[in-house]
Length: 410
Picture 1 (cartoon, rainbow, N blue to C red):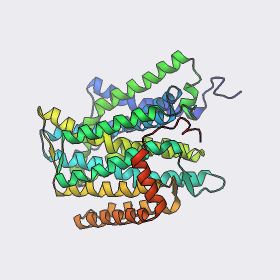
Picture 2 (cartoon, one colour):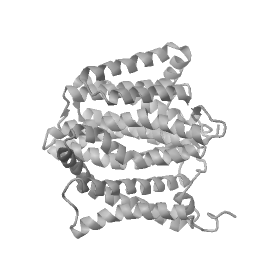
Picture 3 (cartoon, rainbow, N blue to C red):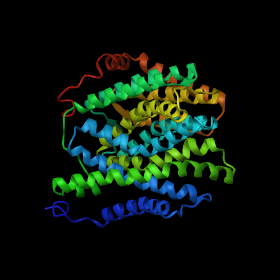
Picture 4 (cartoon, rainbow, N blue to C red):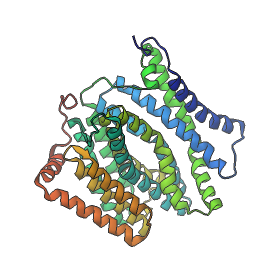
């Protein structure tokens, strides 16, 4: 009989839960007592830690949800919940942009940074963890055939994203299309075959509770961190900008790279643990679903938040830098999704995505952004020249939304 079945909690799991609770509760208590700091860098660090702890708790809750719904839908739900901190920060920036136009650049910077980090850093790291954790030193991750829905949604969203830089706006039209695409993605994922999840850490212990208490704990794992994120998003974003001024670092840099990395790090940790324990498909699948979430729902919510805050329907106007950033992000996304249409992700592909991401990260110059965007597109075309990739892409566009009842069994 295992420790989990006897209800015993290993010390490491107790420490995980205790640490997450402390990080979340400290900020709730400080706000309730009116003792939240207003001096950098504590005004960014303390709410940032709350968001960090909340993301872990939300990820555990989403993993437990796999006991009730299909694996494809659960991974999509896990990805959505895990990036809620990212949504909170970006939506706050878009909300504020309606009153202060300078925040528009920060909102798009946060969104593009989060998307490029997922592919350029997150995907290669998961493969590296899988390689390190496997006895045979596996050099590639094989995707499940059930992930065709993720790839189809990502491909359609990516093609649509190329329109945004040319019209120079994020509008309610984008909201309707992208949120509609996300809704179709979730509905189709929900039709996939239901399989028992492979839980680990605190979720594995909570899953042994009687059904009523398991569900009660799961609901609590949504509500408590949800409250923490709600009251931490604004001070975290503002604290980052005050800290940037204090340290002499451009606000754009902190908002584009540090904020998404901080808010998504728990998601990376969860995916890395899956990969290190040999379940690379679940870890990699979570990050693919996160990309779909951010490339559809997150972008679609920005003009909606902007319009609601402004009191009337109005598009977010994009300047040259924002258009360049979105075009570059779309080009990176196109190369990534075309790579995956052969249903595998190898070390060579991981090295290519990571290398391109790191080089352009440290050269934030307009002509360099356009050069790398062009390079991504040329490489994507290079893959599409090969008949197997071209057939797979066309197949995804034609029938990628169809759900096979046995898709997740294979």
